[in-house]
Image (cartoon, helix red, strand yellow):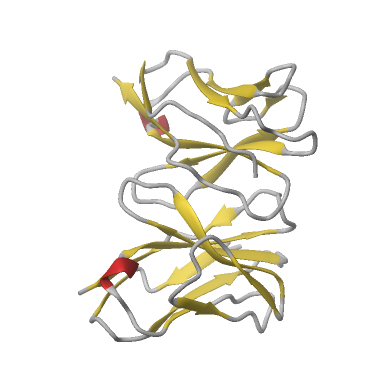
Length: 112
Length: 108
């Protein structure tokens, strides 16, 4: 099992550009999550999904969009990148809500 | 999710036990207590979780107070590889809230 994979590892964006952060898991987990972590801070939940076709907002959803067309994939879309979105983004999955979450290695995003 | 409170940092010597405290005074009866840790430049990883009874696994032990308002993560013999940020989280739903955690430094 590869677990949770994320691509790319690092990306530099210009203000106003758009991009999609990819996340995939091969554990057949129902729940998937996107977090962001700013320097020296804890993780903040952006969006989560309880299954294919179902997504819901977390604590900081503004400026992001998600979709969940399959159990395996949960991409995060940034439409108009802003410097405030400079952060490290982590994707995670769990079998059920409240159960152990398994995290990917993260995507470091720099918006200039 | 119930709010948790942890010290900002703690230091330990290598090969000595480490006790990392956490307060969760507003925890509800069905909330589990989860501990995750984050090594430098990596994503968080699960350490241990429990509800009422003390728990042991290969990584650590979790001691839960009888009133469940506090808990302690115990690393029995700290190694340099245990230097990380440790997050204590209480919750029963899918929205686990990761605070700043406690930064553990291990001295050789």
